[in-house]
Length: 426
Image 1: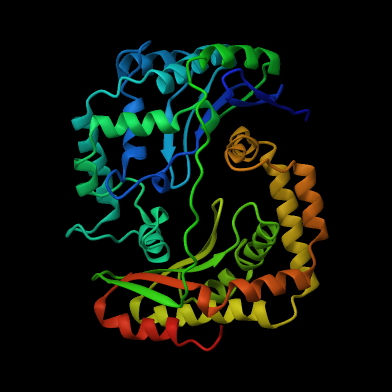
Image 2: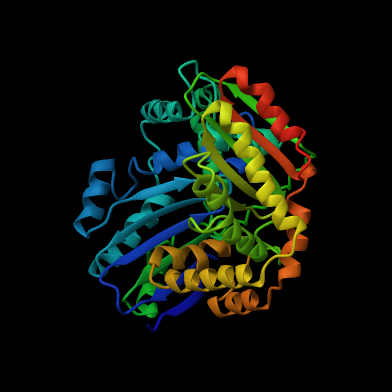
C-alpha cells in the first residue's frame, strides 16, 4: 500500500497534514486544537467543552445546526467532536467527491461560529454531567477522581465538562475570549486522509481556513510532582467496588515512553498477558483488569483499573501489585519481550489501515512535538533491552508514585486501604 504523507504550512500559519491513500473509498477530515480543560481556570472551567458544543449551532455560512448538518450529510458526512484535557478535535468522514465541501463547512464552523442558544447548550451539558455523578450529585467517575487526586491545585485536575457551578457562570464574554485565544492557526492542525492528491487538498484547505487568524501556540505549566502513596475512597453502596491504581511516569515525548508501551503489553495485552492471566483466568478474582497509558506534554500516567465484589477487592489489589512487583524484581524472560515487541510491531502495521489512527499519529501529535515516522518507531522498538524495561518498571511502580481511587461500600474502606497503603510488595 502506497501512502503519501505531506506536511504543509499554510499562509496563515495553519499546519496541514495530508495523507494520499489511493485505496480509500472515503475521506476523513480532522481539526485538532491545543485547548482543553487544562487551559482553563476555576472561574471558567468547562468553557472549552461548552465551546465545542456551541460550534455545532451554526456559522456565518450555515446559520443554524440543521442547515449545517444537511450540508455535511449531503456529502456523506456526520460532524463530531471531542474535548479532552489537553486538546479538542473536530472530525467527519465524507465521500471523496465532497472533501472540498466538508473542508468549507469545518472552516466556517471554526472561524465564524454563531455561538447561539447558550442557555440551551448549557442545559444539554448539565444533562451530560449526570453520567459522572451519583443520585446525590457526588463524583463517582474514576478518571475524574483520579485526576483530582493526582493534580490537586493544577488545571489537570479540572473536570472536562466543568461543574454545575462553573458552567452556570460562564458568560458570552468568557466564551469569546477563550475562543479568540485558542482557535488560531498556530494552535491548530488540520489532517486530511483521502484518495485525492495532496496538491488538491492543500488548495482546498487554504481556501476553507483562510479566515483563521495566525495567533500564537498555547503552552502549559507542568504540575508539581505529587508524592504518594495515597488513596481516595468514595463511599457508595453498590454490588461492586471499582478502583484505579495510578502510577506517575514520564511524558509522551520522553524517550522512555515507548518502553512503557512494551511494559503495558507485557502486563495487559490479551488473556495470556500477566494481569488478565493472574487475576481473571487463574484466580477468578474479577471479570476484567485493564491498563491505560496516558501521555501529556509534561507528565505521564500508567493506570490499572478493575472492579470486584467488595470483600474480594483487597485480594484483587494484592494480586495486581504482586504481578507488578514480579516485573520489577525478577528477571524478565526474553520471550516476553519478544512477544511484546512483535505485538507492538503488528499494531504499527494495523494502524496503516486506519485513516483515524494515521491522522492521530501524524497530525494530532504535531500540536505538541514532531511525530515519529513508523520506521523510526519500529527501529526504536527493536533496540529496547529487557534490562531497560526492568529498570524503568522499578522507577515507575513504586510506592511514592502510587495514587489510588476507589468507589465502593463504606464498610470495606479499611480493608481496601490496608491493601493499598500497607502492601509490602512495592
